[in-house]
Image 1 (spheres, rainbow, N blue to C red):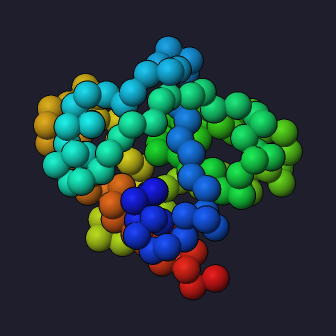
Image 2: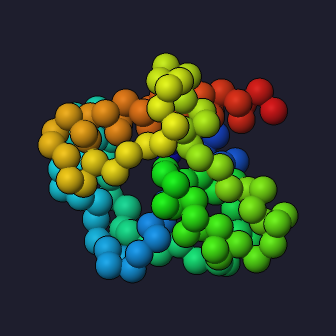
Image 3: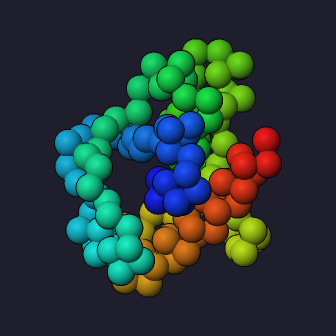
Length: 135
């Protein structure tokens, strides 16, 4: 998403961050396999992992999750019903893959799993950016 926002000239207006639910990867780079597949598409994944915190509800207008487990983990940390209105499945923005309801974790899959996730992310992020630009 960051690359798309940068290319659209919106990086001064849209702040993007990424966080995981568990603390076991805090400070680490993304999975080397994902970095390899992303690099093939000219994405530079150099951000370091951080853990999602309840304070994130106050820092962000929108919070996107990839799957049901993430949704439940984030929901448990929501300080209010109003805060929960910020939480959405990123898959809600899939247009070229309308039958997919979540973005799967490719960790235990092979190369095709990482390619599939990148396909889904590109699809959802392009649609999401279009929606943002229309507002």
